[in-house]
Image (cartoon, rainbow, N blue to C red; front, side, top):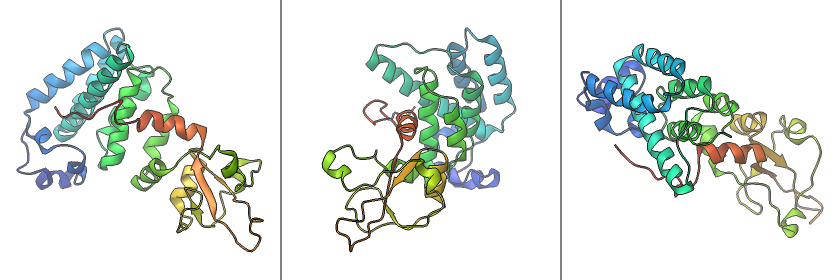
Length: 256
């Protein structure tokens, strides 16, 4: 394919202006033949027992514009590298995608993603599809709806405290975020964190996706002080992050 002079010169024309933040410029300097050959070498072993999926992926790939093919190939290559690293560490083998339809959709979404953080999440999700059978199809739908702001906020959150002394600071309630999703009160992601953050749409969306939840802090100790809400990961949010943002040491980043 004819590569642009620089990552920004031609990509803005097709809506990929920011993708250089996530993908090395060298990706765009490959010839069309090299991209197609690399893509085929990646797809073949993953779909050898699912011929229909292989044909569907190749047909979808053929219909993409050349720059999207380069991005999609790079994404899949990084996913395979990370999956192999994890397989070696855990004594596992790569396998055909656990959920073929969602694997293809994840690859399509990743080939269009322009934000570096969200693109990395797509790479990790694709890797999980070929190494971890518990990666849930719903994860693809959720990640496709997250804006960069929500993705960054989500990775900054922590689970609800379990230490008994810290739990005394919280007033637990039934109903979860459904009872408080409309509240516009300040929040923190750590007890005693200052300053509190204003409620915004990103917080609401994470709660609606069941990735995050809020717990009101006990306002009776001291009675004169009002504490902000505590925003924390749900167990579902923890499971989601374990797939799309695993610890760095588990999936080391490598460039082709």
